[in-house]
Length: 287
Image (cartoon, rainbow, N blue to C red; front, side):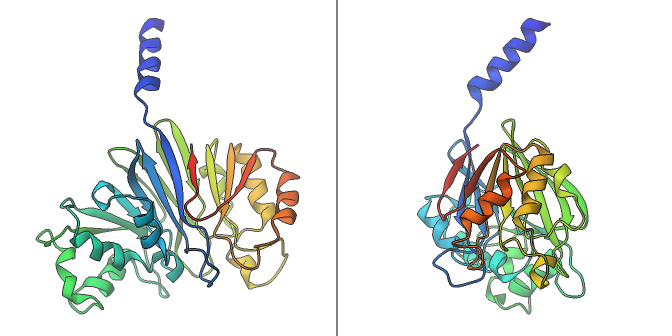
């Protein structure tokens, strides 16, 4: 029996594919020389998953030499402009690609302030949508490929060929928002999305993650509207420590946090002793 386990272990090691996360966009909604939030999961040198499609992410995707044909899914953590605005550009580019397989577009269910994933795609590409000339992308008879809306209400799991996803709803003011846990090749990546972790549910999701991607949009402030939307450095540190994550990637960097890296590091290192990385566009991290 031990011999069988050894063979299984050696086979897994020998045939495991390399896993990398590329930061397509490390910024937020400001004009600050950075593309807005977007991440690209590479498995075995193939681009398999995009998380968020903020402004500029389409250009960064092109620069990375990724292929639309190789994507297995798209996740939009929420539907703020700086996380979703480049989606139509990707879909239009897909028309000129060789892709024919359908593509899941995963995002939160809606509320009175924001549309559901289905409503969002219909507003873009539906019969009365802004880009109605491409309405066939919502059907199996598309001239390019069908996009399929997947609405996440509270918690959900989805399994794809090369990875699995676990979703939870997180607090981001009035905005329906998601955090997600990606598992592939024995590696774990957790992306917080935009949240202040008011519900205290990121710690469990991030448990033993190899990489915790934390949105660092505010400095260490104690009050103000931004604290209802985003995590302070001390909150990020507390999650990383309790979840025992190996590395923390600080991204969604904004003008109010740029040039405060020394202060941020000092606060986080008081609680968390692991590796801390400040994200830059096109940064590629091996997991």
